[in-house]
Amino acid sequence: MGWGSAGTGPAAWLPAAQRSATLVPDSPVPAIQSWARALPGTPQQAGAARHFVADLLKGSPLRDDAVMVLSELFTNAVVHTDSGKPGGLVTVQVSRWRGGVRIAVTDQGSPRVPVICTPTACEPAESGNGLFMVSCLASQLDWHDDASGRTICAILGKVPHDHPAVRLATPSWAWRS
Ligand SMILES: Nc1ncnc2c1ncn2[C@@H]1O[C@H](COP(=O)(O)OP(=O)(O)O)[C@@H](O)[C@H]1O
Ligand SMILES: [Mg+2]
Image 1: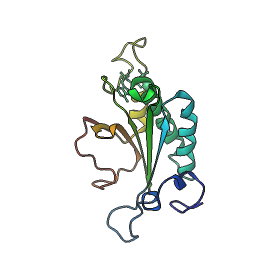
Image 2: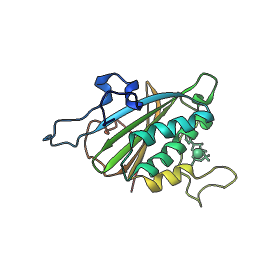
Image 3: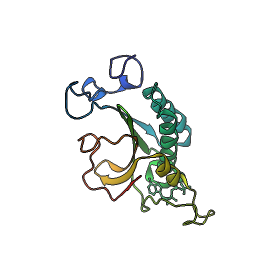
Image 4: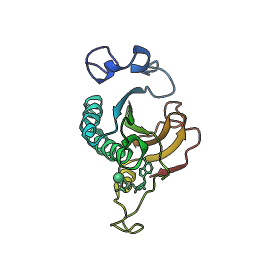
């Protein structure tokens, strides 16, 4: 199945208009394709989330890193936020364009905030280094709260500057390599 085409793959869960955000070929901004899927916030769903991302990123050199990033962000949503409570949901968004990929994970909120713990900044017993690892793989990492919850976004590879599909209103913090 090609990107954004109708079929039985992950993209088929979304209405046609949302399946592909591909822009006209001679547009000055890069063509971006996006997909989203909501999953129950349980550890067992991490595998389904990984498959969703891996399928959509077939052929991309950033695929393995993107799956690793998704895995960390999905696990954090389950472990640290209300998405991990009974009935909770985690929404995974995947976007790809020439040279880059965006993984965004939306959870249902938490009194905590995401913190990048460098190996020296946090006690090992207190916290892991999942977000630190994500920050090492990502060109850009940020998060924001809105009506849909808290979204943590990682861009891998080339950042399409000033594109509406990846622009954030006001990130709470942003990290760039
Ligand atoms: N989605 C999230 N919502 C709220 N807090 C988060 C979220 N993700 C991570 N955090 C906070 O950031 C800390 C660092 O996350 P991480 O580096 O993944 O380590 P770990 O998950 O092993 O604690 C977590 O301990 C948690 O307090
Ligand atoms: Mg973690």
